[in-house]
Image 1 (tube, helix red, strand yellow):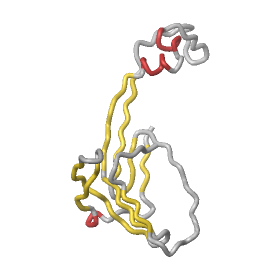
Image 2 (cartoon, helix red, strand yellow):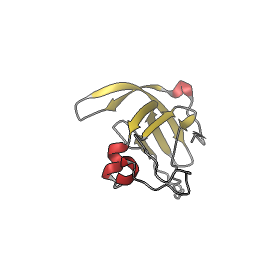
Image 3 (tube, one colour):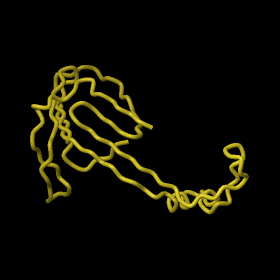
Image 4 (cartoon, one colour):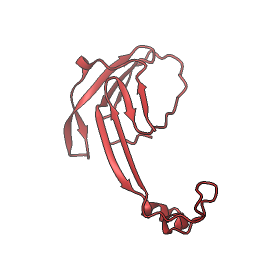
Length: 135
């Protein structure tokens, strides 16, 4: 599966500048921080550029989730294959995500849309300078 989403208002590459990203209360590293301001929401957004890629062997996780028959080779996959029983040695998963000034590119993605709120005259700062989870 492939997904490429562009920002509604892309970050300007010339606005990307070094910024602090805190990995703990006392430790930080310098990262390329994309910065933009949107007038429709009166919001200043600072988000680090990042790219992640990883591979996972999922057999242990599947066992813990209760898919014992799938992992041990005792699963009946009638309807999926002509073989009644199919041996599965391992299950692997590889994922990649890249977030930059243009948008997000990933091998799989889930997107959530949030409703727009009423306009405010207060400017909010949304600075992503600590570890975060993206779904």
